[in-house]
Length: 181
Ligand code: FAD
Image (cartoon, rainbow, N blue to C red):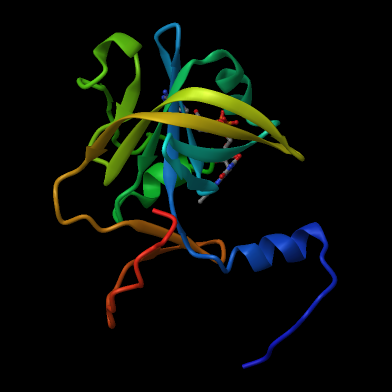
């Protein structure tokens, strides 16, 4: 096993932050009846009171322009077997036919015209709260307005070091309670 330290350049930063394992989401938003989806793993919970989350969206992404206009969006958390959806909504799908997926309305908030992906692990509906500068990305802050948890078993798709993984539990221990919650 070799350790290494390096001067940060964008490739080294990407490779190093890529060692922080995450789940995978598809952000969906709807404008004038048209839904657009984009794969994102730079998503985090931001605040509990008020309930806020953040997503970092590349300024060149189509989603970035749409989110300037949209008033709502949904963060869809993918299941372990939904790697194809992650690749598809990242623009990397090579097959002639798209993988199967369906959009559904949020029955909890029908008046808001929000759309989520069906059969995902979980989904979080947000009203756009603020958009902040973040270098070559926008930091999209959403106020949480509805939550959905899919049917068990709830096993996430994971992203680590530029590859997809599934959770294989060999050890499980309780973490300490978070004092910020
Ligand atoms: P496009 O590239 O235009 O769309 C993506 C694909 O989805 C296209 O093939 C499009 O046809 C299809 N699509 C979208 N909506 C629909 C629809 N309604 N019906 C059918 N097809 C549809 N980028 C970030 O900015 N932030 C991140 O946090 C981030 N995390 C990522 C994590 C992973 C694991 C991966 C693989 C990529 C990540 N990306 C992230 C990159 C990002 O997903 C891609 O750059 C993406 O292509 C940018 O999306 P876009 O809005 O420009 O959409």
